[in-house]
Image 1 (tube, rainbow, N blue to C red):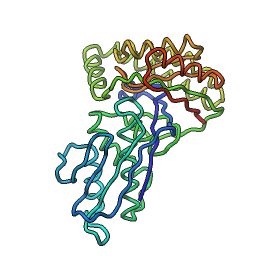
Image 2: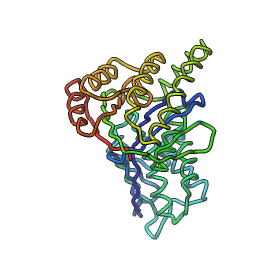
Image 3: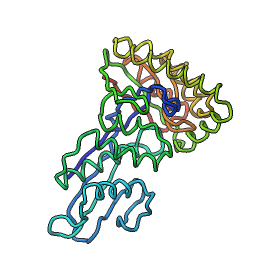
Image 4: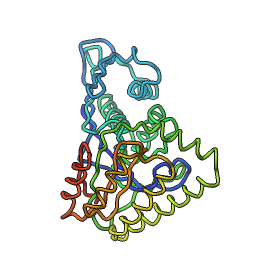
Length: 311
């Protein structure tokens, strides 16, 4: 049984979303994680994930291993046995075209694909809400105190307006728009940047609450602009959001260089996306100019670019 899940980008609201401000995220279907579950002659649950150089039997993985925890959680919840079919064991193959630790939701996408593939293999009927809750538990291992936005947008594969602790809101795009994603090539573990922002917030609560308020307001305006078919308004909002993320110390010289290069190449706006300190940035571009923006990002040092249409 095979299943796949898309990547994602956060358009607005990263970091502030951890503090109950709204954020916007959209799926990126140009990149995918895929999981396949098969009967195996070998006893036990064998996991093969070349992307992270993992070839192991489930029982040998530590309790806090993200992939192992997803499988164990499903087995425990539904009282499943690793013995399947007539062959005595299970082989799980995991592959992904989503760069790891780059803000594109690779961990959540692998978890979603894995749960769906296991559910199909064992003939379980899971709702998106059930899958989302299970993936969120795995995200805690990846990110410490995750917002929940990655697992939500990837599970539902729709644009999401997200406030931590509140019901999920998906929404429609009034008019398609083009985003260029630029990868710095610098790994960016979200857990560290989230932890550092928390330290700043604990040190000067008022200052950082005000920054989070401003970011939250940008997310709200951005959602209205997208729904009303005025995506061109997002450019300036991106620039404002990036400046606030710089104040949160989560940008980096590499990200700032790419953001500047995108704007110089004609992008309507640009900002980092995700945890920061590396990973990806995004730029809003007119469809006809997206390739030009992508080429400029490569010249400025981006290791890879993706042009995606949000619709």
